[in-house]
Image: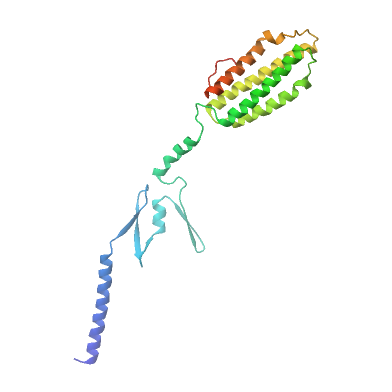
Length: 232
């Protein structure tokens, strides 16, 4: 056999061995696929040098995402909702952190207590002035009206539960009743009408204000809204 024939045979044999090793290596590798939890669809996975690679477009398709290209960068944007399994737990977590709709929120109760304290001071000022025959003037009650108006607004802003909003209507009625009571006796004084020192004792509007205040205090203590009609 000639030398050149032997060399050609050896080259062919070497190429055959390389091809066989490649084919055997591919055959030994098991096909891999990527599954995303909570999403339908699969993407093929390619392993190179011990690392796994997946087609980014296939991944976007599975996750209902989108791909954008800018220069040498690829941006994969995933939907905000997340997978269906985690999406169901989010509302439960949010509702667990929110106040119960059947009770009052802490911020509303705090503002409501401050507000009713101002209403009480307003009424006590009116009662003392009438009982002692002091002059009645709009300037005397203006600071109490302003403070109560401000705190009422804060209470309404703090309302976050159904009970808060319902009670907010009642404390607003208490404000209107107190303003009407004050204006009633301011008008009497302006018309030079006689005002008995115990006039408030038998005044139905004054009694309504006191009864409403007790009703609101009971609701705050029980942490439950209950309209008995006394504030209307």
